[in-house]
Image (cartoon, rainbow, N blue to C red; front, side, top):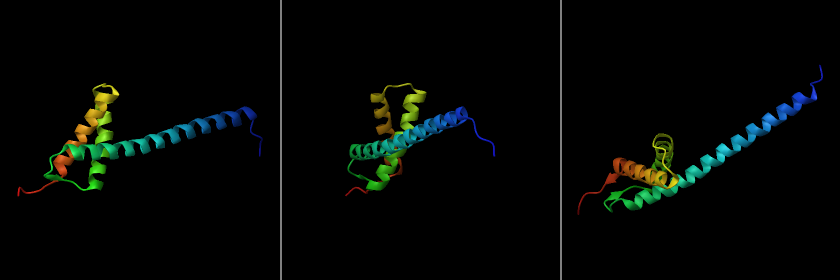
Length: 107
C-alpha cells in the first residue's frame, strides 16, 4: 500500500469535522423543533373551544407538524420575523387540531 500524503489526511479530517458539526447541528435543530412543536400543540389545544377535545399526543403531533409547516411558510415564503412566524405556527397547529380533532356533541 502507498502512504497517503499528510495534506490529504488533514483535508479529510477537516471535512469529517465540518460534516459532523453540521449533522449534530441538524439533529439539535430537530430536537428543538420537536420540543417547540409540542409546546405549540399544547398552546393551540388551549386556544380551541372546550367542546373540541383532542388527546395530548395528537395535539403534540399536530404541534410539531404545525411548527415545521408554519416555519417553512412564515420564513421561506412570507419572509416574516420570528414573532410572526410563531403566530403562524400556532395558528396552523390550531387549524390542524380543529380540522382533525373530535367535536363533542352539545349537552
